[in-house]
Every structure is written in structure tokens, then in C-alpha cells.
Picture (cartoon, rainbow, N blue to C red):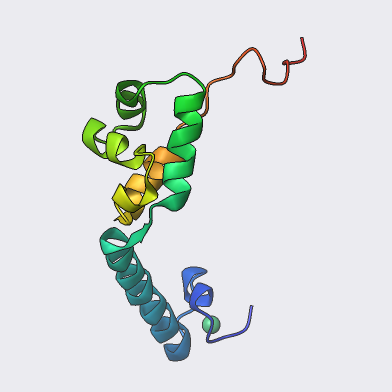
Length: 113
Ligand SMILES: [Zn+2]
């Protein structure tokens, strides 16, 4: 581990260059997190995923209940005309939707016994 890298101080090194590198890394992580909370992302991947959930038999209400995302937003993402869907959504909303697993259907791959 070279001196001057942020994790050097994490391992207990007290050199000034390592302590200041650790301090810089901490404030960068805080700034990234603040930016991430504000960040909006393109809604397309989430809209595609919601459409797959819908095709697998889940209703907009089911998807809302499972993901914690509002029913209204789910319905807007399911609009057939992409122009009428929200263009951008919160990253946290995208993460919640993409984290909702597509239910296994009869046509899906069989689980090994
Ligand atoms: Zn060091």
C-alpha cells in the first residue's frame, strides 16, 4: 500500500499525506452520495423492466406494492407511447424497479430439482 493513498490511513497510518488523502476521499464520497440522491436517470431501462413485469402477469398495482414505487408512476411508465412516459426518473426509483424480480412463469426455464 503506497503512502498517500486514502486507505493507508484507514489501516492506521498517521502520515500527513495519508490523513489528508483519506479526508479528501471522505468528502468526495459525501459529494457523490449527495449528487446520487438528486440524480435523475433516463427512464427507458426501468420502463422496459416494468413492461417485462407486466408481461409476466403482474398488474401495475402488484408492481407498485412489490417495488414501493407509486402506482401512478408505474402506469405512466407503462404507457404504450414512449413520448407520453416520464423522460427521466429518480435513480432510487430506477433501482427499486430494476430490483423487482420478474416472476417465474410456466414458460420460463425449469428449476433443477
Ligand atoms: Zn501512509
